[in-house]
Image (cartoon, rainbow, N blue to C red):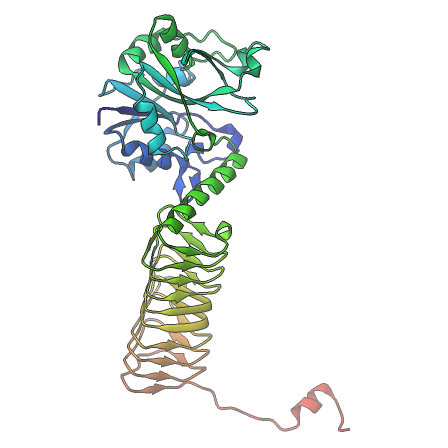
Length: 432
C-alpha cells in the first residue's frame, strides 16, 4: 500500500445545527466519518484524520473502532481552512490522497481511479447542471489550469459547470513545497488547499481532472444532505443484498444497517427495520418488524414484532406484537402478544398469548429459564428469577413465582365467585 491518506474532519459543521460533531452523525448505522475510513483502509496503511472542533470526542470515537489511525490537531485559529489543515503532517508514502470526512458515499473504486491517475496532482471534478455554491475548475487540453472559489469567480467563470469535488491525490513533494507557501489573502482569510493547484500548474507540474459521480462525492453539510445521503446509502445496501439473493418486498420501505449480514434464503417484507450488526440466516422477516443487534436463524419473525439487542433465535416462530430482549430461543413458538426478556427457552416450547417474563424488579434484571417441550398458557406471568423445567404445563392466567419441576402442572388462580342478579342491581334496572 504505497499511498498515504489524510481525512479532513476539523470543521464545526454549523449548518447541521447540532451539538454532535458533523462527522459523527450516522448514515445507515455508522458515523459518516467511519464510512470514509472504511474506504480508506482498503487502500492505505497510513491514514491521518485532521481534527479540531470537539477534538477529543471525535478522536475517542474513531480510536475505539480504528486502531491504526493517526490524529492531527489543526491550528484552526492560526491557520484556518483546508490548506491550514495539512500543516505539520508527515506522510509515510510518496503519494497522498486527501479526503473529506463528510463524504460517506465515496467508494474505494473511485478513490483508486484518483490514486492511479498518471499525474503529479489528480483532482476530483463533477459536472453539475447547477454549479452554484462550488468552486469552479478551469480545464484546458485535458489539464487543470486553476480552481476559483465561487465568491472569487468572475461573471464568466460562474457559467462553468465543472466544479471541484474536494478530493485530491498529490505527490508528497508538492505538499511539502506548497503548503508552507499558502497565503490567506482572500475573501475568507483562510488558507485554501485549492491554491496548490494553481501553484503546481505555474511550476509546470501535470495536474489532471478525474471526473467522478456527484452521488459519491457530494458532502453532507445539513440535515437535508444527511437524509439524502441516507437514502442513497440505503439504496446501495439493498441493491447489494438483493444481488446476493435476498428477496425484498417494496424495498424502498425497508431499512438495513450497513453492518447487517444475510446468509442463505432470506425474505424481507415491507416496512422492516434492521439495526446494528444483525445476522439473518434462512429467515423470513415479516412486515413492519424491527430487528436490533440480534441473530435470526432458520425461522420467522413478525409481522409487527420487535427483536431487541442480545437476542439469538433459531428454528423459532415469533409472531405479531411479540417483543424479545436479550434472550436465546431454540425451536420455540411465540405466536402473539408476549414479552420475553432475559430468557432462555428450549426446543418444542409454546408460549401462549399475553405471556410476560417479569425480569425487572426496579433495581436489577433477572433470568427466566424454560426447558424443552413446555406449554405456557395464555396470560401468564413468569416472575424471575425462575426455572421452568422440561415437559411442564403452565395453566393459563397463572403467576409463577417459584421453580416448576419437570412433568408438573403449575396453576395459580383465585376462586371464581358468581353473584346472581348483580347486573340489574348495579345498574338499577328492573326486570322486563
